[in-house]
Structures are given as structure tokens and as C-alpha cells.
Image 1 (tube, one colour):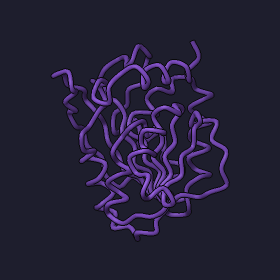
Image 2 (tube, rainbow, N blue to C red):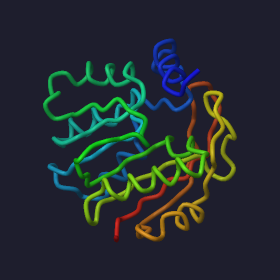
Image 3 (cartoon, rainbow, N blue to C red):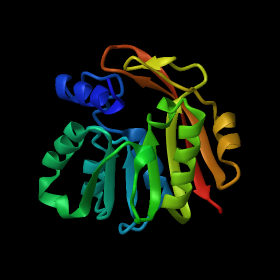
Image 4 (cartoon, helix red, strand yellow):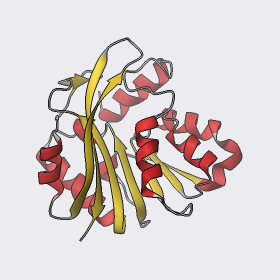
Length: 204
């Protein structure tokens, strides 16, 4: 089964709260974005958006240049349906993140639980190159991955876990570290997952 087929199957067969990463409100990501004190015209991309409510909330806050990217068209269609009245403020891109082809530059690149699925070194380098070329000068990266003591797998797929130190080392060439912390995510199944969240600012 291809990577796309894998995720289309998940999003077409499971309820919105039937996946471990579900959040009724993505409070951690929202708090980080709020702390950045961005202009409401800031261009924000949510990579691996799935059916997240992040875009909904950002629209409610008044942001008007939002892009959601996911490999699953099913997931994107659900978000588009929810925000239909403001669809002129949101762009949907159906693509694997490492295949993203866009001339748009972003002020914020948000990734909660995509990067840790990239376990191949070549694909990881593609991701990092794309990240760097897609962010505006002094743009922000908000990244959340399974932490060093987090799960080894998710949705049947292997993951690469990261500590704050490891993410800082990986990104040090082009990004200035702003903040980082570990957080326990409570899943809909009454289990927990340990996450690492970091915020960086592009310097090169």
C-alpha cells in the first residue's frame, strides 16, 4: 500500500476522534502562535494538517492567509467543508510534504506530528531543504514530534523520535532556537504520548 493510500484509508474509515493525534482544540500550537504576536496578514502553513481544528481557530482569530497541506484529500475536504464560509482565506494542498511544489513563501511553518514519520535520511534532507526555501526571512518554525521517550510507532508506521537537543542540532545551521518543551498528549483512547515541541526563527 502506498503512503497516500495508507492515510486515505485512515481518514476515510475512522471517526475524527478515532485517531491518537486528535485534539478537540490544538491548544499547544495555538498558544505558541499567539505568543509570536503575528500580524493577521501573516502567511501560515499547517503541514500534515489532517482534520485538525487549527485552521478553524486561526480563521476565527482573524488570520486571512492560511495554507493546509496533507497527503489525504479526504482530510482536507473535511476541513474545507467546516470553513466553507471563509474558503477565500484558506488554500488546500493535497501532497506529500516532501513533494510540495509552491512558489509561496510563508511566515510560519507549523508541523505537529509529520516530521517524525520521515525516517529516511534522503527524505529528511528534502524536508529540511524545502522548509528553508519555503519560509520568509525571519519566518518561524513550530515543530512537534514524538519525544525521545515517546512511541516507537504511530498508525502502524515507524517514527523517528527527537529530544529538544536533537532538534536544535539538526536545525542549527539555518534556524535560531527560541523555545522548547516536552508535553504529554492524552489520546482519545485514554493513553498518553510524549511530545517534543520547539519554536525556531529562520536566520539564513
